Length: 250
Ligand code: PGA
Image 1 (cartoon, rainbow, N blue to C red):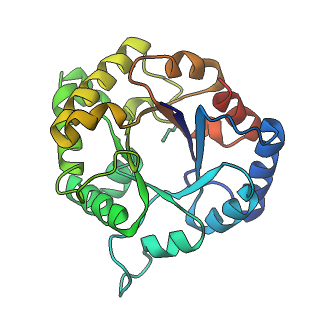
Image 2 (tube, rainbow, N blue to C red):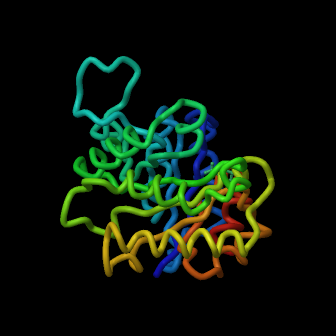
């Protein structure tokens, strides 16, 4: 299975910075189309179009960090799937820990957004992961199981497993420099692979499971070599083209 290498730019980069980063990334990668890697960039809404334009002619795909689950309407401040698609996005993140824990999104909201995005034609990376307190209380399995089951409830059928991926992002490893250990990652990804059998049956092995949380060029190769790790979702280390290229080429 090819690996998905995704960049979550969070609330960083204006349009000029987005263009410059993609241009430099393409120079470093020399537009080589390595079929074993598929690259997705998640810029802030305002830089989706610029990122898409700068990526034209390359294999780099673009996604949105969020969407509102409606076609259009009186939803001040919100952005629909069709709007991000109009700017070139083909992917969206749902359930990112910053949306769950900073913005306060519930599992129900994550589920609604996932369903709506798939119906609208966007591919989705659903993010799940435990807090440090939950891990220390021995709740890893319960948290992963509950977040995954709720996110996957009532998804459109037949579900195309190439249109939905899961990112395991332990909250305590995001933006902290404290990467999960390889045994931690192996354990969580094995749990997720097994849980996926409940939602997608025998096709569970075709769903990409990404790891996210302080991935860097120095640790990407070892993480990507782990069983059930089908890609990485990268925040801080994806902001600089050189560093992100190091992860793509790891
Ligand atoms: P990080 O962020 O790589 O900076 O830890 C990962 C993420 O939030 O997806």
